[in-house]
Image (tube, rainbow, N blue to C red; front, side):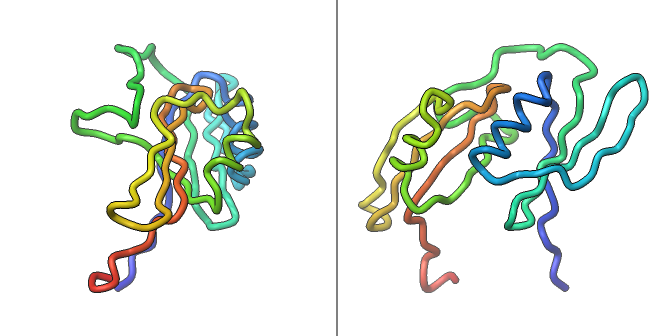
Length: 140
């Protein structure tokens, strides 16, 4: 039985800035808003590939600083990633909003044309932007 991927849940401090960033650069739009009371909302953002971000308001302060580079190396969510046709063109489109934490790096030894960069979103989450990834033929 097929089990489709549904969403990644994130907690953010500044919903308008977060939402504008993902709408502008990755094509997300509001798909559902749930009133949680006390002026708080749970928002589902969706892009054209039916990839959802479920966005919660914070209920407590962050206990430690956000990781840099390609994300934390301890157990947990390391980063989220988007595939683009051209990493350099995406970085140019993003201008100063592309806060690079690592790269761009080429992985030509593994896949010809594979190139990746990691940036921070407005909340400090690490986002990978990659071009040229292909599945391994004998495993696909």
